[in-house]
Amino acid sequence: MNQQNLPIAVVGGGIGGLSAALSLLRAGFDVHVYEQARELREVGAGLVIGPNASLLLYGLGLKDAMEAAGVAPLAWRQRRWQDGQTLLLSELASRTPPEFGAPLYTTHRADILGMLAAAIPAGRLHLGHKLATLTDDGRKVTLSFENGATATASAAVGADGIHSAVRRVLYGEEHPRFTGCVAWRGMVPADKVAHLDLPKESQLWMGPGKHFVHYPVSGERLINFVCLVDRDGWTKESWTERGDIKDVLAAYDGWHPQVTSLIGAVNEIFVWGLFDREPLPRWSTGRVTLLGDACHPMLPFLAQGAAQAIEDGCVLAACLKRGGDMAAALARYESLRRPRTSKIQLIARGNKTRNHLPDGPEQRARDVRMLAGDAEWSIGATDWIYDYDAAKASEDYLGLPPETLVA
Ligand SMILES: Cc1cc2nc3c(=O)[nH]c(=O)nc-3n(C[C@H](O)[C@H](O)[C@H](O)COP(=O)(O)OP(=O)(O)OC[C@H]3O[C@@H](n4cnc5c(N)ncnc54)[C@H](O)[C@@H]3O)c2cc1C
Image (cartoon, rainbow, N blue to C red; front, side, top):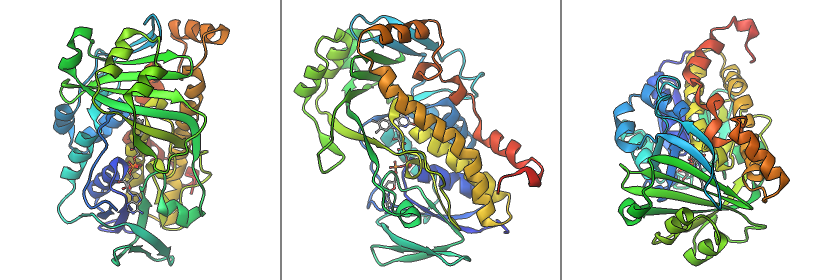
C-alpha cells in the first residue's frame, strides 16, 4: 500500500471525524469528510479537553486556537453534595505542562468544532451528505449518500457517532443501551453568579443518585454545568429535549447552595438520555473502520469521549501512514486503541455507581479512599489517562519488529 495521496473518506464531521481528517491530511492522505448536517452546529454545552487530547491538537497546529478557545482551570475538585467538603483536589496548573505536556482545557463545544472545521482545507468537508450505505469490493470502498451523490475511497472511516450508519453496515443493527442516567446541561453568565466567587476550577459534586459538574468556559464569561441524575427509563423520542428548571431544582433539593444557585441562575436547560454500548470485539472489516462514539460510546463520567476520538484519529493516521496491507494497518490501529478505550468505557460506567452512592458505609469507604488519594477511577485522579501521548505510543508500537505487530 503506497500511502501517498491515498483517498480516505471520513463519514461524520463531529469532533472525532474532523480531528481524524486533520491527522490524516497531515500524514499525506487525500481526505474528504462527509457530514449529514447542512451546517455544522454544536449544542450549547461545555467540553473538557483532557491534556492527552490537547497535546494532539497542539500537534495539529492548533495551539494558538486552543489557547484562545479554552480556559485552563487551576484544579479538579471533588466535593460532598451537602456540606461541600473537598474529597479530592487535583492540582492542574502546576502540572500541565510539564508533566502532561499540555493543559487541560474547559471549552464550549461550538468553539472546538468551529476551530477544527476552520482548519480543514476548502473543498474537503461536504455538508448535507448523509451516508445511506457503503460497499467494499476489496480494492475500494464506494459510499452512497441520501442526496444521490456517491464517492469512492481506498478506505472509509465511520466517525458518525453513537447511531453510526457505518457500524450498522459492518455489524448489523444493534441498539445502544440506556445507562439509567440523564444529563441536564446549562450555561450561566459568570457575572450573574459573581456572588458565588467561584475559583477557576472544575468541580464535581457527588451525592445520592446524582452528581453535578461545573467549570468556566469562553474566556471565563460563562459557567457550564451538567447535572447527572439516575433515572429508570428514557421514553422520549429524541435523545435530547428542552428541560424544566423546576424539575432540576427539585432533583437537587437539599444540595449545597453553590449547586442550587448555579442551577437557579440558568435561563434554559436541555436534557439528554445517556446511552453507551459494551466494548465492541472489533471495529474494522476489510477497508472500513470506526472511531469515536461510533465504536466506543461511553458515559461522560471521565470526560473522555471526545478526547478518545481525537486519540483514535492520531493513531489511525500513524498506522495507515506506515503502509502495507490495508486490513493489517486497520488491525494495528484497533490493537493499539481497543484496550485503552475499553478500559475507559468500563471505568466511566462504574463511576455511575461510585459517584452516586447513597450516604452510608459504602460512601464513607469511598470518601476515605478519595481523601487518601487512592481513587484512580475518579475524574480528578486520572493521571494514567492524561499522561499519554497517542502519537508517541503509535511510534513506539509501529517501531517494533514487524513480526511482533498484531495484524
Ligand atoms: C453530557 C455529556 C458530556 C460530555 N462531556 C465530555 C467532556 O467533557 N469531554 C469529552 O472528551 N467528551 C465528553 N462527552 C463525550 C463527547 O461528546 C463524545 O464522545 C464526542 O462528541 C464523540 O465525537 P464523535 O465525533 O465520535 O461523534 P459525534 O459528536 O456524535 O459526531 C458524529 C457526527 O456524524 C454525523 N453523522 C451521523 N450519522 C451520519 C451519516 N449517516 N452520514 C453522515 N454524517 C453522519 C453527525 O451529524 C455528527 O456530526 C460528553 C458527552 C455527553 C453526552
